[in-house]
Amino acid sequence: NAGVTQTPKFQVLKTGQSMTLQCAQDMNHEYMSWYRQDPGMGLRLIHYSVGAGITDQGEVPNGYNVSRSTTEDFPLRLLSAAPSQTSVYFCASSYRAVPGTGDEQYFGPGTRLTVT
Amino acid sequence: AQSVTQLDSQVPVFEEAPVELRCNYSSSVSVYLFWYVQYPNQGLQLLLKYLSGSTLVKGINGFEAEFNKSQTSFHLRKPSVHISDTAEYFCAVSEKAAGNKLTFGGGTRVLVKP
Image (cartoon, rainbow over all chains, first blue to last red; front, side, top):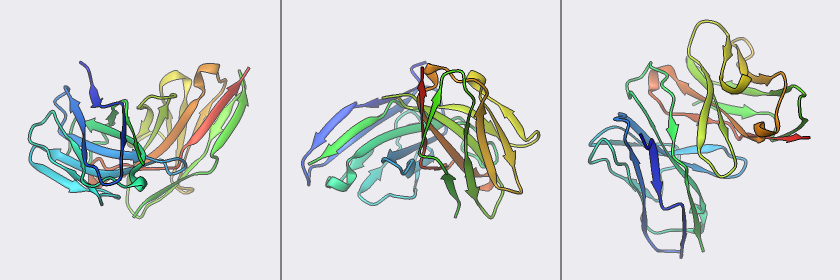
Protein backbone atom coordinates (compact mmCIF):
# COMPACT_ATOMS: atom_id res chain seq x y z
CA ASN A 1 0.00 0.00 0.00
CA ALA A 2 1.18 3.52 -0.77
CA GLY A 3 -0.82 4.84 2.20
CA VAL A 4 -1.77 8.52 1.95
CA THR A 5 -0.23 10.38 -0.97
CA GLN A 6 -0.25 14.12 -1.61
CA THR A 7 0.72 16.20 -4.62
CA PRO A 8 2.43 18.52 -5.17
CA LYS A 9 5.14 18.56 -2.48
CA PHE A 10 5.83 22.27 -2.96
CA GLN A 11 3.84 25.07 -4.57
CA VAL A 12 4.24 28.82 -4.93
CA LEU A 13 1.18 30.87 -5.82
CA LYS A 14 0.53 34.52 -6.38
CA THR A 15 -2.25 36.24 -4.46
CA GLY A 16 -5.59 35.60 -6.14
CA GLN A 17 -4.59 32.43 -7.96
CA SER A 18 -6.48 29.21 -7.42
CA MET A 19 -5.20 25.67 -7.17
CA THR A 20 -6.07 22.16 -6.04
CA LEU A 21 -4.06 20.09 -3.60
CA GLN A 22 -4.47 16.41 -4.32
CA CYS A 23 -4.86 13.69 -1.70
CA ALA A 24 -5.41 9.98 -2.24
CA GLN A 25 -5.42 6.90 -0.02
CA ASP A 26 -5.42 3.23 -1.00
CA MET A 27 -6.47 1.76 2.34
CA ASN A 28 -10.25 1.92 1.80
CA HIS A 29 -10.57 4.35 4.70
CA GLU A 30 -13.94 5.95 5.34
CA TYR A 31 -12.68 9.11 7.03
CA MET A 32 -10.46 11.71 5.35
CA SER A 33 -9.42 15.16 6.50
CA TRP A 34 -7.29 18.18 5.69
CA TYR A 35 -5.18 20.07 8.23
CA ARG A 36 -2.93 23.06 8.00
CA GLN A 37 0.22 23.35 10.12
CA ASP A 38 1.52 26.72 11.22
CA PRO A 39 4.44 27.33 13.61
CA GLY A 40 3.40 27.18 17.26
CA MET A 41 -0.21 26.39 16.43
CA GLY A 42 -0.03 22.68 15.84
CA LEU A 43 -2.38 21.36 13.17
CA ARG A 44 -5.84 22.80 12.61
CA LEU A 45 -8.68 21.00 10.86
CA ILE A 46 -9.87 22.60 7.62
CA HIS A 47 -12.45 20.12 6.24
CA TYR A 48 -13.26 16.48 6.70
CA SER A 49 -15.30 13.72 5.10
CA VAL A 50 -16.96 10.63 6.59
CA GLY A 51 -17.55 8.98 3.22
CA ALA A 52 -18.01 9.57 -0.49
CA GLY A 53 -20.39 12.46 -1.08
CA ILE A 54 -20.26 13.70 2.53
CA THR A 55 -18.08 16.60 3.66
CA ASP A 56 -18.14 19.05 6.54
CA GLN A 57 -16.25 22.05 7.84
CA GLY A 58 -13.57 21.96 10.47
CA GLU A 59 -12.05 24.73 12.55
CA VAL A 60 -10.62 26.91 9.73
CA PRO A 61 -12.65 26.31 6.53
CA ASN A 62 -12.75 29.83 5.06
CA GLY A 63 -11.09 30.11 1.67
CA TYR A 64 -11.09 26.35 1.04
CA ASN A 65 -13.44 23.93 -0.71
CA VAL A 66 -13.47 20.15 -0.74
CA SER A 67 -15.36 17.37 -2.44
CA ARG A 68 -15.30 13.59 -2.15
CA SER A 69 -16.60 11.84 -5.21
CA THR A 70 -14.77 8.58 -4.46
CA THR A 71 -13.58 6.80 -1.32
CA GLU A 72 -9.96 7.20 -2.41
CA ASP A 73 -9.67 10.90 -3.30
CA PHE A 74 -10.17 14.07 -1.26
CA PRO A 75 -8.89 17.19 -3.07
CA LEU A 76 -8.59 20.57 -1.37
CA ARG A 77 -9.26 23.67 -3.47
CA LEU A 78 -7.98 27.13 -2.72
CA LEU A 79 -10.40 29.49 -4.41
CA SER A 80 -8.39 32.74 -4.35
CA ALA A 81 -5.05 32.34 -2.60
CA ALA A 82 -4.04 34.83 0.09
CA PRO A 83 -0.71 35.22 1.93
CA SER A 84 -2.48 34.04 5.13
CA GLN A 85 -2.83 30.63 3.45
CA THR A 86 0.93 30.15 3.38
CA SER A 87 1.28 26.94 5.36
CA VAL A 88 2.03 23.25 5.25
CA TYR A 89 -1.04 21.20 4.39
CA PHE A 90 -1.55 17.63 5.52
CA CYS A 91 -4.13 15.14 4.39
CA ALA A 92 -5.04 12.30 6.76
CA SER A 93 -7.32 9.28 6.75
CA SER A 94 -8.65 6.73 9.21
CA TYR A 95 -10.38 3.40 8.81
CA ARG A 96 -13.79 4.06 10.29
CA ALA A 97 -15.77 7.27 10.45
CA VAL A 98 -18.29 6.30 13.11
CA PRO A 99 -17.85 7.93 16.52
CA GLY A 100 -16.51 5.89 19.38
CA THR A 101 -13.77 3.97 17.61
CA GLY A 102 -10.66 6.03 18.41
CA ASP A 103 -9.06 4.95 15.13
CA GLU A 104 -5.68 6.54 14.49
CA GLN A 105 -5.23 8.87 11.56
CA TYR A 106 -2.61 8.19 8.88
CA PHE A 107 -0.97 11.30 7.50
CA GLY A 108 0.42 12.11 4.08
CA PRO A 109 3.85 13.73 3.62
CA GLY A 110 2.43 17.24 3.27
CA THR A 111 2.34 20.06 0.72
CA ARG A 112 4.31 23.20 1.47
CA LEU A 113 2.43 26.17 0.00
CA THR A 114 3.74 29.72 -0.27
CA VAL A 115 1.47 32.56 -1.39
CA THR A 116 3.24 35.77 -2.42
CA ALA B 1 -15.02 23.12 22.69
CA GLN B 2 -11.86 21.34 23.64
CA SER B 3 -8.32 22.66 23.74
CA VAL B 4 -4.88 21.15 24.15
CA THR B 5 -1.88 22.84 25.74
CA GLN B 6 1.66 21.63 25.40
CA LEU B 7 3.53 23.50 28.04
CA ASP B 8 6.98 23.39 26.47
CA SER B 9 7.61 24.56 22.94
CA GLN B 10 11.20 23.29 22.94
CA VAL B 11 12.99 20.69 25.05
CA PRO B 12 16.74 20.20 24.70
CA VAL B 13 17.99 16.93 26.18
CA PHE B 14 21.23 14.98 26.19
CA GLU B 15 21.45 11.55 24.60
CA GLU B 16 20.58 8.71 27.02
CA ALA B 17 18.85 11.13 29.42
CA PRO B 18 15.14 10.85 30.21
CA VAL B 19 12.58 13.20 28.73
CA GLU B 20 9.03 14.19 29.66
CA LEU B 21 6.73 16.17 27.40
CA ARG B 22 3.74 17.70 29.09
CA CYS B 23 0.22 17.84 27.68
CA ASN B 24 -2.91 19.19 29.32
CA TYR B 25 -6.34 19.28 27.77
CA SER B 26 -9.70 20.78 28.54
CA SER B 27 -12.95 19.19 27.52
CA SER B 28 -16.40 18.87 29.00
CA VAL B 29 -16.91 15.41 27.50
CA SER B 30 -15.05 12.10 27.33
CA VAL B 31 -12.08 12.11 24.98
CA TYR B 32 -9.53 9.90 23.30
CA LEU B 33 -5.90 11.03 23.61
CA PHE B 34 -3.05 10.68 21.14
CA TRP B 35 0.63 11.47 20.77
CA TYR B 36 2.02 11.90 17.26
CA VAL B 37 5.62 12.44 16.17
CA GLN B 38 6.81 14.42 13.17
CA TYR B 39 10.36 13.88 11.94
CA PRO B 40 11.89 16.69 9.86
CA ASN B 41 10.13 17.22 6.53
CA GLN B 42 7.76 14.33 7.07
CA GLY B 43 4.13 13.75 7.96
CA LEU B 44 2.92 12.73 11.39
CA GLN B 45 2.92 9.18 12.70
CA LEU B 46 1.21 7.76 15.75
CA LEU B 47 3.34 7.10 18.85
CA LEU B 48 0.55 5.91 21.13
CA LYS B 49 -3.06 6.46 22.07
CA TYR B 50 -5.33 6.16 25.08
CA LEU B 51 -8.86 4.92 24.49
CA SER B 52 -9.85 3.37 27.83
CA GLY B 53 -8.62 0.98 30.51
CA SER B 54 -5.12 1.15 31.98
CA THR B 55 -3.97 4.72 32.36
CA LEU B 56 -0.37 3.83 31.43
CA VAL B 57 -0.04 3.43 27.69
CA LYS B 58 3.03 2.07 25.93
CA GLY B 59 3.86 3.08 22.40
CA ILE B 60 6.51 2.64 19.75
CA ASN B 61 10.20 3.43 20.13
CA GLY B 62 10.15 3.07 23.93
CA PHE B 63 7.72 5.90 24.61
CA GLU B 64 4.94 5.73 27.18
CA ALA B 65 2.28 8.11 28.43
CA GLU B 66 0.07 8.32 31.48
CA PHE B 67 -3.51 9.52 31.45
CA ASN B 68 -4.51 11.45 34.55
CA LYS B 69 -8.21 12.23 34.49
CA SER B 70 -8.25 14.43 37.59
CA GLN B 71 -5.46 16.63 36.24
CA THR B 72 -6.65 16.33 32.61
CA SER B 73 -3.12 15.50 31.56
CA PHE B 74 -1.48 13.02 29.20
CA HIS B 75 2.29 13.41 29.63
CA LEU B 76 4.71 11.55 27.37
CA ARG B 77 7.92 10.02 28.69
CA LYS B 78 10.95 8.13 27.51
CA PRO B 79 13.58 6.89 30.00
CA SER B 80 16.56 7.20 27.64
CA VAL B 81 16.51 9.18 24.40
CA HIS B 82 18.53 8.67 21.23
CA ILE B 83 19.69 11.15 18.65
CA SER B 84 17.03 9.72 16.35
CA ASP B 85 14.30 10.97 18.73
CA THR B 86 14.97 14.52 17.56
CA ALA B 87 11.57 15.54 16.20
CA GLU B 88 8.43 17.51 16.96
CA TYR B 89 5.83 15.86 19.15
CA PHE B 90 2.13 16.65 19.12
CA CYS B 91 -0.53 15.84 21.67
CA ALA B 92 -4.07 15.58 20.31
CA VAL B 93 -7.57 14.81 21.55
CA SER B 94 -10.82 13.77 19.94
CA GLU B 95 -14.26 13.64 21.51
CA LYS B 96 -15.54 10.10 21.83
CA ALA B 97 -18.97 11.06 20.53
CA ALA B 98 -17.79 13.31 17.73
CA GLY B 99 -15.94 11.01 15.38
CA ASN B 100 -12.32 11.41 14.38
CA LYS B 101 -11.85 15.18 14.46
CA LEU B 102 -8.57 15.88 16.19
CA THR B 103 -7.63 18.97 18.18
CA PHE B 104 -3.87 19.39 18.40
CA GLY B 105 -1.58 21.11 20.83
CA GLY B 106 1.04 23.53 19.56
CA GLY B 107 3.80 20.93 19.50
CA THR B 108 7.03 20.37 21.44
CA ARG B 109 10.29 20.33 19.56
CA VAL B 110 12.77 17.87 21.09
CA LEU B 111 16.44 18.33 20.29
CA VAL B 112 18.65 15.48 21.45
CA LYS B 113 22.27 16.50 21.91
CA PRO B 114 25.22 14.08 21.89
